[in-house]
Image (cartoon, rainbow, N blue to C red; front, side, top):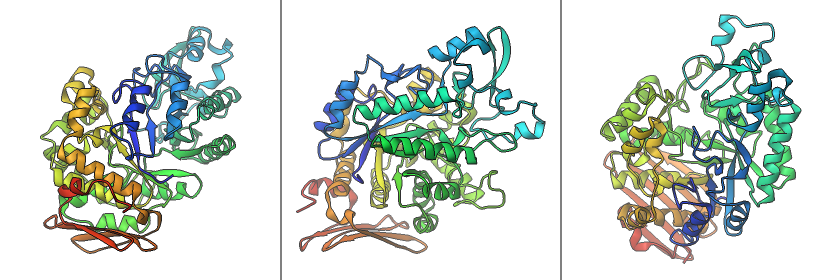
Length: 497
């Protein structure tokens, strides 16, 4: 279950569910044990790249069928999203509410301001509501002829659900039934931190959120699935949450790795390795931006410092913008009309200036950290920022959501940096040391990560001053030492020998 996994949109990497399966069984065989298939529901190309489903229980026929999902689960562990916080305004259920208002049998599924504040709200109560965008989380809509303030945490295209309502519970469990019935065994709860809205709180990660998560987790377990909880916030919230769920993301890892490489300072990363939850999914990049909120101080925990201080965060953000030649600045914040001020939108490759050696060292740091490593499809191909797509859509995160044709994939897989990266992924996938015990050390300029299992050993030592490094792997008395990560393709395969 700890084998590396791919993260991919079926339409952007393979073209269809079947095309994605063919890639995993073809040129990517023996590389990934699982795959997180980003939303393939109807429509996969809505206002938020599938995260605004109109029908969350059926694949978009342009991508395939449940049979195609089931076929993929024969050879790979499959993770899919359960979008628990919201639904598309174009869904049949909400369209009925728009037409009939309170007379609609689906009215109770959707939140308005009065659902949470039936007696009204003060200015202080409204401004206390936590939201990943500037402004209040409401959109004025006419429901059955009556103007209402509909709760829209993310955008006016995504209407928030009342997860306490029986109809919503039936809707969500019906999604889980369809997914697990097709063989899906990992469920990612998208934006779950926002579901527990209650007056008098910041409406984020409340007691109601935790109770709902535990209820949904219990149901998933009955259906043979585990859950991954997607929450961006202060690192202490992630540590606390990990004790009560199956899996959490290590969203602090990407900015800490970037800080280590840009500032030549591994100390924040070393400290994090000593306290991070073990039941984590590790990433460098995903379909969203590179989280900054995950390493900083938070208004949700006033007075509690982050993993990086304000000066370090400012320097990191500017280092990413400089390394990308300014293209990440075009895609981040109000400049791209996406207002994701808590993330930097950039491919991880460009966040390191397209430097092959630095990029491979970053990937090795991820692969040597405990947890389930997931590699985003753009990151797998060491992709550059897609400024053309950004300009067409105006959506900042699209800079890291490239559409790859089969010829593009073939060309990318032949690049030395991609071949070396795949060798590193296969090392993590197949070497027995990674089934054992993890240890780490560090000082002001260097970091060392080690695994051992019986006589099998694997280690990475990196000095940030000059990027000197050594990878050592041992099994059955055979020792291999690599002093340049760019030489990994020369020892590709045979990691278990």
